Image (cartoon, rainbow, N blue to C red; front, side, top):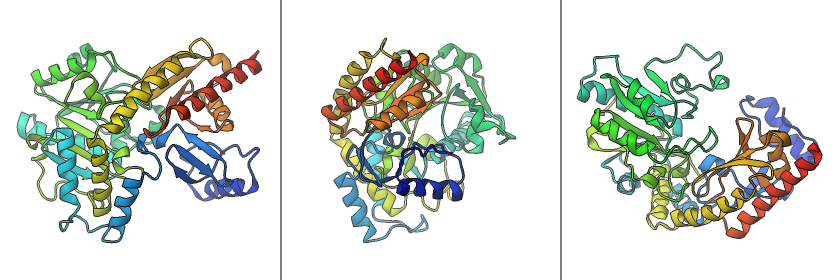
Length: 413
């Protein structure tokens, strides 16, 4: 149950309604949001909060970005869904724009991020059987420990998060889990039937974990030499979050398949995609994969507007420049309630000194100071503000964090 202490009756009633009629698969922070603009959210009582969560990077471009809202409104006046049984006008421009942004040939649009992951798995297996010559039903995929790719039954089959796995078996075979950041472990785990290495360039749910600088290039070299696909899950890390279009760009790596989602929908509608070349995506034939809503006209119109925003490079530059400022400010907190800071661009994992309490307790203190952030794995606060945030707003949030840590230290002593 969400702690409702100190909330107005209006917000208490709204939370009680959700807890009575909704499945309890989340433990939200105790506030009810009514509206948002840019980097700010406003609750039912008119209180404003800086959004340092961005819906796990789904709101990279801020709440209500004018260009994205305009694209959605214009398409809403025309047609929103046709299914792929016919062609729609926005679909072609969207997939061409996204393919060109990624430097690839083809796009397979879906809806949610985990659908892109599931699609990538299917494509890798199909490529393994039809191109690499792996014996039927013998394909294996190497994945990373502490990964987060979603919570479908197949995806949790290779998760080591017991909360996500407990009582949801039996699990899907065909995956080999190795330590994140170890090329030696990948090489040892691979064999003639390995069809792909699936990884996050930066592990988000694990605490914004950045691998050694030589890891992704080593994975790319090995997968090429061993005739194995490299699949990069850029659902959280991609589309400007880290200061480049993709986190892989930071080390000059181009995977065989990009898995995209979250920010691709502009914070308006679920949009995801697998993007790659025809040697993999071209293997699909009618009836072998699909989605009623995947690539629908509304999603395509918003997705194209997102691509247009990213083509200018302005969002990536904001993330890079403001991210450097954010990380400088956060580094100064080490030794003052923080013992480690990781990340890239406007994305940071901040590890809280256990002496001060859990990361969630610090998130409550931040909430009281008008900043929304979320904890992960007890010790880490994830910070991921919209890329439209200003330097002054960043400073306001870091000042709030410093104040929250000071308060926690005073109470602990």
